[in-house]
Length: 167
Image (cartoon, rainbow, N blue to C red):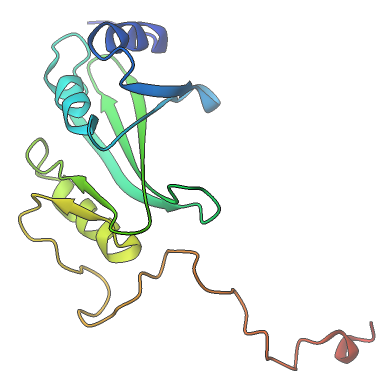
C-alpha cells in the first residue's frame, strides 16, 4: 500500500468522528488533532484497527503542562502508520484537579511504561492501567517534577543580584 496524505486521514476521521475532534493543524507537516477524554479511546481504537489507516505503532505518550490554560495538563499521543508512512499527533487536555484519562494499554502493551512515566512526572491518572505506580521517582514523592508549579530560581538568593555584576 502506498503513502496516504494528511488530508485523507482527516477525511476518514471526519466521516467516523464528526465533531469529536478539533484544532486540526499541520505544524512542520505533522498532522495534529485535539480531542476530549471521552473520545480518546474510540479514536485510538479506530486508528489502530482500521485497515486503511493502520496506525498500529504507538511511538510515544507524554504529558505537557500549560499552567495558564483552563485545562492545564495534557497528554500527547504520537502514532505512526508504518504501512502508509504517515504520522499523527493527538492531544487531550484535562483539568489540573484530578486529571485522568482512560488507559491505552488495552490497545498497545507498550503504553504501559509510557503512561507510568506520564503519571510519575505529571500526575495524570490513567484509568484501567494494570500497574500505575511511579517508575523513575521515589515512591513516597508527593510532587510531580515536570509540572510548572514552582519558580525556576529561589527569589531569596543574594548571589544573583545585579549589584554583584556591576549593573
